[in-house]
Image 1 (tube, rainbow, N blue to C red):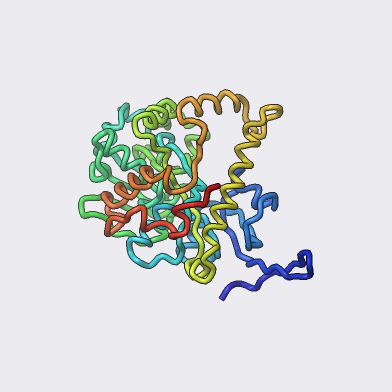
Image 2 (tube, helix red, strand yellow):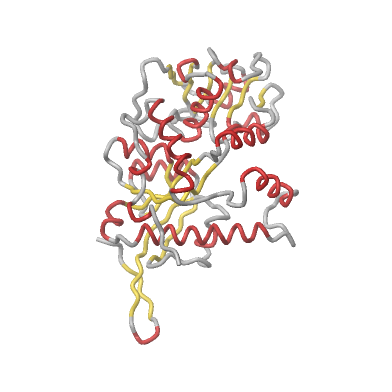
Length: 345
């Protein structure tokens, strides 16, 4: 059954009953209008929880803790491939990123090109992270570096030990070893015990200016722009999911979520366009925005299935090729049926 409804009076004495639903997501400009109530989700009174991806995904996939949750695209794809997804996704992509920024190396090891990663020890927090799926796919497809060419070392970034949130069975030729007990990947990279690190967060030793830790793609923006021109892919990291039982009981809910989150993103984009006083705590916002639009066009961060089918299909192919999904998931398997099309006037 649905959660206890909150009631409010409307004109004429009728009672409108909204669903009070927990909503876990990151603290983004594109979701802020939902948090502050500027944008309403039809039929829903959300109870927002602004959480880190690590906490949010762990609680969602281990304990199904939220009614609506931002989800790792990789973890969600695993659950779909295994036939036991507790959530059903809608095509709202709360996190996207060009992952050329996500490959860190020891600069004193002769690693000058992606091909130089062959035979190296590379740290990862979790093998199945969406960012890592994209990086491994790009390395193999564009540079000929296969996952089996690298020795992967898994562990916590700043705290020793970190479990995969979903158990994964990897191909026999993929070598994954655990970091030594009590060790962190950040310290191992700083001490030169591993040759590099791949992940969605930068390692602390890089942000602190370690003299021998840098990015593989030193001009990461230029590399990403070239990649986009070649592929038209802006990688998707996270989707929005709703508890499957709720979507079955309230078939209007997935569409209402797409509508509300799309309106919230539009509000963020409108604020970004207002250059009278920048809304982002960073200089050169207008110049950066113009540079991005020159490469990607006006719709920088599209939601919906149709404009993103090629992006999702590429990810799902990488995911299957890397042994994370036991069967090839199709784009049609990912989302609630009501969200593949929308009305128009």
